[in-house]
Image 1: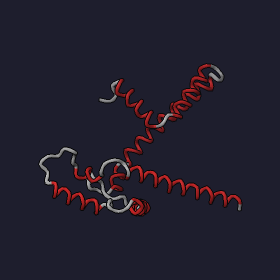
Image 2: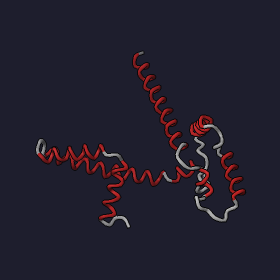
Image 3: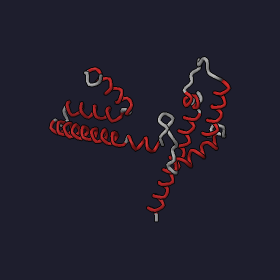
Image 4: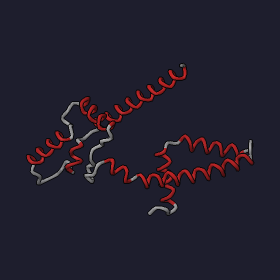
Length: 173
């Protein structure tokens, strides 16, 4: 009985965290400066020679079609309902459904993840063996410190670091 209650409590906490995360993400995207319709229309602040009346009609029809004239809570409810049913809409760039866009990128993502796992495993085993051979010595402590620092860095920092290193040594254009 106690285990069941603990599991239910954990599941409830996880669902609450997901709900709060979705609210924060939605609000951050929705309340960002600028009008998302400008991205669709591809207009800049200094467009000259554009029929402003026609542009305004197009802007209003797009705002209505995407539900941007609704209140923020209504927009969130509509967005959440679509996310739950896996209806993510269509891409602004390609006009294809976003689920198709995501699935078309899964093979490349899977390949990168496998390559990273392979490299990670090889380096981990090599560092582990070297550290075990030199247990308690300076080399062991240096490897442990390096691994702790590497594990604590956010992924985007490591990405920028590797991008810089690959460019520096000529692996990337």
